[in-house]
Each structure stands twice: as structure tokens, then as C-alpha cells.
Length: 306
Image (spheres, rainbow, N blue to C red):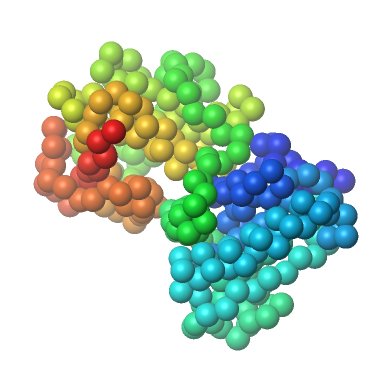
């Protein structure tokens, strides 16, 4: 049977919707996904081993070092009252040493206390990528470890006219027109994305297209995020975060000091607004062609100077 943990470590499968923390040569930490509990971390051994007694001395020492440090950082990040710890490696496809570290909040339903917490792994309302990322970043800051992007997701310049990219952009435009009143759709079509002022990027895993995004130069030190769209089948895996982080890094490297965007106000855009807010974007006055209206909101971020 294929090991899910090994597939995740190799970048063939994504088990989190947030960045991961690479602690040392032996251990990584991810926020579990999908799970209904914010602050459900998983400490994963970076090689395949079935049981704790299979750990080398160095791996065991790392576990002893990191587990209490993670608990303290998780408490600081979430305000949890307790930290649950469990290691079974019994689930189908997961016979691989991995330690669950779960933030048990002060207000906690009885049906999730103790071993019953594992019911939270079966949920139709999982912790979203923005909240999972916030927790991982806070834990990483407490440990002095910088989060790394989702394994296996590569963001790079791409051709908006490529077959798979064009198909995803058509879905992006169709979605925008479906949920936004006429006259208020600002998504760029293919011709607009070919403008020299626009830099276009795609996120892929193993060549498979996961999402797209673009950076448009507005003049001076101002740039705009455009055409952010994650394929439906790849949502909840941190693709949007990987794209946004890459676009902001490109903006900073290009000398931009301010990055802005426009998005919808409707509930269907809530996840996008949450993602942007988690990256530091704040509401701002309309810029460029945008106006004050009930259907759109503008946000901006001032980048730190190098």
C-alpha cells in the first residue's frame, strides 16, 4: 500500500492547506487538512519508519526536543488550554511515524474531548488555508523556523495562451460573470494578460496546472494583483497562498513598494478576502478604474523596504 506520508514528503500528495515547517533533517510539521480544529499540527518523520522503536537516536532526540517546544509555541499561537498528543500510525495508507499535536481550546465540545477528537478529521467545514497558515506562521515564529511553501507546488512564469492555462482562464472569467453583476467584472481576458505591463504566473505540481495569478505594473512603485484563480480540484491545498507569496516576492524584487487589488464583496469571495487579509492587505480607497460600489472592495499592502 502506498504511504500517504511518504507521498506527501515527496511532493506527490498534499495533506495540508498551509506552509510547512522543516524543523531539522529528521522532522517536519504541517497543519492537518481537512480538519475542523484550528491548531491541529502533525509532526512527521522525514523517512519511512513504522514505529517509535524504529527511530534512530538522532530522530528520537529531535522528537524529544521539538514536541515540548511545539506545544509551547502552539499554546502561544492559539491560546489553547491543553495540547493533545497521539501517535498511532495505524490508518490505512499512513503506517508511518507521525505525531498529532492538537490545540484543545478552553471552550471545547464534549463530543471532541480526548480520543473523540479524531472525529474532527471527518468534516465538511475544515479550517481554511488563511487560518491554518496564520497558526503555522505563528508557531514558526515561536520556534525561529521560517515556513516553506507547500511541497511540490512550483510557481513560475507561464503562457496565458497555453491550452490548459487558457481553459482555466475561461473558467475564471465564466465564474466572474456568473457571480458579479454586469458592468462590475474586472477579470482580465487573454488579450489583456498579454499586455507587456502584466507578468503572468502559474502554479503547477508535476506539470499539472493548479492555479494562476498575475502582477500588473501600474506606474511608479505601485503594482496590482490580477487573475488569481485556483482550479476547483486543487482548492484547500495552499495553492492560492503559494501564488500570492510568489507575486509579492516578484513585486518586491521589482522595486514595487505598494501592491493593491480589487475583489468581490459577495460571500463567494470571502475565502479570497481572508487570504489577502492574512498576508497583510487592508481595505483602501478605489484606485485605477475601480469605483465605490456594493459589489467590489479594494485592498492594499505596503511592502517593507529592503
